[in-house]
Image (cartoon, rainbow, N blue to C red; front, top):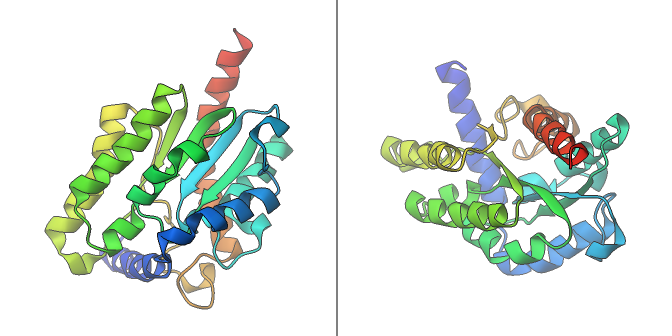
Length: 239
């Protein structure tokens, strides 16, 4: 990526995160609507025998401004169904969530037979200039608790606003690399790679991915997620 395109990626990210900063107190209501009405979500965990893939994130996961079926989790569900994978996707995106917000609702989010957690959090931490060490503790807590249940965690990286200075942005970026190293995680280095800063791939506000941008993110996530599912299915077949 050139230095110029990188600048526009981060500039767009700053705006994207700003729009995600809805009050976290509204999260339970928003998440309940996503799950009960979504194509893959279910109100009662026992309603489906399929193992679950939970996407835990902010509005970038929730698909703010898009029909439900065009959110990244819904696109992943459609791909799973089309390729014969027997998984149920749960959209746990909640606009405004910081890493602390995601940690606070983790237990509720992991109801049911969850085998994979796709973790997309941290953008709002960066927008608010929260200490990267605090974000790391929160994300580490989510990862540790999920892994203690035998859940595979796929971590997605994010970038901090450049206005906070090079020292902060470098420390922020390093948090994700350190977590990947410490926990040996499958990793998507930048959730908005190839989308942020490109007007034709974002909605009219120039902030949130449009349908085409969402499809690109789905492909980015799928490249990392598919090998995880292949391994899990192989392990299941040998039990």
